[in-house]
Length: 174
Length: 436
Image (cartoon, rainbow over all chains, first blue to last red; front, side, top):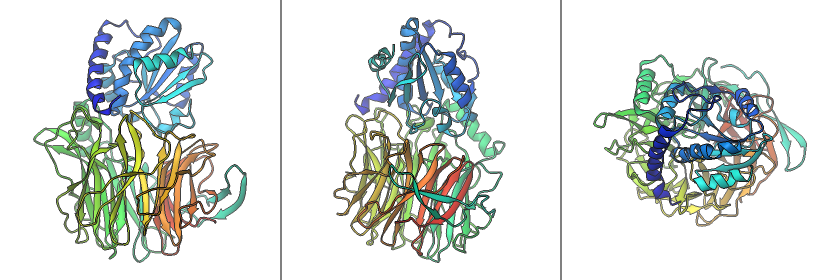
């Protein structure tokens, strides 16, 4: 993708996400509701969340509200989860915004991606929660992991990806 | 100040081999206070051997400045949250002890992180210079902006002048598309003092950024009177600068500045580069990539490019996410930055390496970084020879269960290097000499 095009694409993606969200069904029982305060997750909590989804293919997306490329790909990820949920695909987001920013990030999520199931890191070090799946994470955003049904990381990608690129990655783990 | 609770022993390891030798450092000194949540240190050594350590500490959440910033953040909808304070502690006994920390900025106005850390440097007469990104409000737009501020101490770090803005406030409003909803940003900067005493402050600036672009410019403000005044900032690199990759600056013996930055070209190719300016106010020349695996990333790398210069030799280092494993790569130039040797990994057996810092030694240089090997992040370092080749093994500065990270280095006259780093929520410093 050409760099000069990505910001308007991001805006378009945000608009599309809002439209999709309006028609989307309610969040799954395990997800933080769109209007709920954003829950915090430390390493142990993320581990428990991932354990609870064992048997499904989990798409774990590390993002931040200040990361424009992250915002561009989230609508696609939300859409993909909807498309592939019948085949056992679950999307889990972890916001790398500041832990003290829960209310603001919750409002941001509710405004732009209300169907995006996401937690907010609870620890001051970004590395702490990412280490649950990737001890070698290099603090690049966005980073997305595809975890197989066995809970192990099957794929890791960095930088914003397209809908089709994500589908291809996920299909390889299904 | 508090002595370190634990004497740090550096385990000396060679690539792929177990620990082979032990090097012992002076006991590190803790310079931050126990009540501070401290991070992102920088360090400088003065002409008389004085040592100054600078660090960020979280501001008081109940302060008026913090509340105003929070209200603004809520209004903006999204932001980088940061309302920080800046502290300096100075040693006049070679680093054995440090004075009480001095609060440098006014209010909780510092916007800073490990990847946009404030900078400190001594001038040749002992003036202590500090530059940092600060939160401001653009009244005409009624929006938050980030500007670069400067202050100095002419009494050895006991007091600091009222901070001044050195970046220009513009009417640029990209609050919908750039970091954190700010209307404009002058941050992720650097500062250095040339041998002739000129003070250069450079930063990544969004004033020329368009809504359909994603890269910044480099602007710089220069003082030729020891920081008393600064000329109006000038554009030094027009475009194509990774907007979240902190700059670094160094000088050759002719006081010509060299800029370390990350370029964005083509299909989001993010390359570490070095460029030189003439030292007379002209812009930086072509940015020359330091090489390595091409890193295409439509994302936020948050990775600086650091460098030091001696004559025509340039030592530079940066994280490259396209290497396997991703990590800090060292490259050297022997022709003033026209070309670079093939980059080499500083610690190929680590899971990941990041946050490089580099400083000159008498006949080479020292490089430090943080890495994960078999536990939490720890700080490592290594000597380089005059040609930029590794002159010795990888050394661990820290061990144990604490998370140690974000080292900063400064050259000492005794051929050792002063290192400051963050260990959990504290800032430590000591002098090191790398075994060869």
